[in-house]
Amino acid sequence: MNADPYVRPSLRATRDRVPDPAVEVGAWVEQLEDLLAGRSPQGSAHDAYDLLALTARLRRCRPDLLTELRAAPLMEEATAAAAAAGGELARRALTVPNPDAWLAEVRALDDSWDELDDPAGRAGRAARLIADLDDADLVSNAAAQVGEADHDLVGKLGECTRWLVDHADAFFPASVWVQAVGLALRPDLPEFDPGLARTAEKYKVLLNAFVAAEEELAFAGQPPLPAGVTRLLRLGKSAGRGPDALHFPGWLGVTWAESAAASRPAPPGGLRLRRWSAPGGAFFAALVLPGPVTDPATTLLRLLFHDPAGDPAHALRDKPVRLASVRGTIGAKGCAIFTLQDFAGFLAEPRLEVGDPPQVWQEEPDEAAP
Amino acid sequence: MTLTLRSLPHPAAPARQVRFFATPAAALAHLRDHLLTSPEAEAWALVAPGYETILDPRSPDERYRYSKNAEETGGDSAQPLYDLYLEAVRGDSADADRLGWLCPAPGGTVAFGTSGVLLIVGAAVVTAFLPGQGDPAATRRGQGAGPNATGLPREGGMRSGRPGRFRADEAERERRERLDREAAWSRAQRLYYRVFRPAVQLIRGCHHGQRDPLGRPLGGDYGRLKEVLPTRSRLGYADWAEIRTLCRGEEGNP
Image (cartoon, rainbow over all chains, first blue to last red; front, side):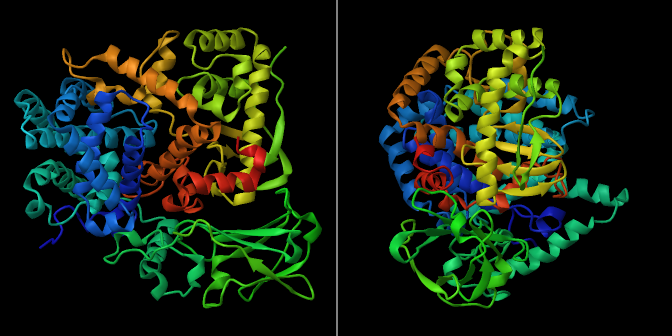
């Protein structure tokens, strides 16, 4: 029996840990941040609509994911803003959804199935149409909860949902996106909030249709997995183990790109600029750390040397450097390049030494640190 | 006379110069599709402030006339806009080299800079644009509409408003008021919130959007940049401003 109603482990992309729910939820968090900060470039009706939809979308998410993305304070703020505006917010939001226009758009997508150009465009369009219907469902549900149920809209959204159910395979190009959204949903949603769980039923329908579609593809005899995908699968396995598999100094803040689908949350950290200054302040160095990592052997770490004006430190060309015991050389453009793999197993402090004889540079305070 | 093509350093191998588009026709198509099409045109005006000395990016009529004129003169009349485009792309290409915000892809090297310009470079620059400035399908519809086209791409379909209930005029007035209030923002804030951040969001979204149903990468694969960009929590406005200053110096952070 499948413990998570919104995850289909048999889907190849899920099996290969391609869908990353943090990507989608992170984007929703940023949209909500902008909305609450008054940076939305749209009118108040669309703002009201997005406030209700985004808040509900995030309420449906796995708590560990929200913790990882530090979304709790934002959600509290959004919930308070929605509560303060009350029924007026819902009434305003309900002027936005146009189910007839959605149906016209989605039928056009279905009619263009034979056009094989721009598969990425098709995937994006299919995902947007699902998200648009989902938002309308979420807003309709939120309005009903504050006594502003709109039965005409509910009926029309029901027609849209029926179309989606009857044509679920038309959304197959968006399969990876749907899997990512499914991975973001809390598995106990039906117990947590039955109303929200009803809005998520569409994902179960779509996922079931995609399982059937993949089985058909397999039956038709698809070519074997390309070597690159096989490699990604292997990397995904080691990446999922994260620091248990490879030990890196904590100050590098390594995160793992494939860890989102793992049962445990990703380790904290990510990119920041580690900075040092030469004795006397004639030069500075900044280490640009990478984003989420899939392959430490090909992930480059660049240590940029510059003068106080910010220009590359050409005067330091060919000087040896040692960063946390890892040796390198400053190149023509004032940059020493390491791979992340170089630091595996070194748990030393971020001590930077430059030149021969080596001079120890002073580490600057990390202003970006929380 | 036709458009004079120029060159810039390859982002992954700066000693090597590459043409800024292989042919004048390709360059003109990119000017039309990106610098002269709303809403990307307004974003380009933030990336390259000299844009507004050439034409008003907010005026559909001016953009349409400029595009038609460029077509009729074989690109000669569009040389100033092409040169401005080149300088903006050159800056972001250098950022990509310095920050390592680049990766190999089937169409060439994909690179991304601190202004939010995404470029793909093969034997020549293949494309250079500002991702996240609207739905491509809506943009194509807008190009077909000619002058006087209005509305936001994200206000189509389900979000287009319920007939008889949605006040489109009121929404447009509120939107304009909001844009007027943005005049109080610094140019750096507008560049970050209106151009750079949407671009990063789109790149991250490509992680799912540019995959076939089995999870295999499709086409241009901009999503690969996700692996070399900072994480979301490390790319807030303050982080970006610091990175931008590192690349461009104080003058790069207007």
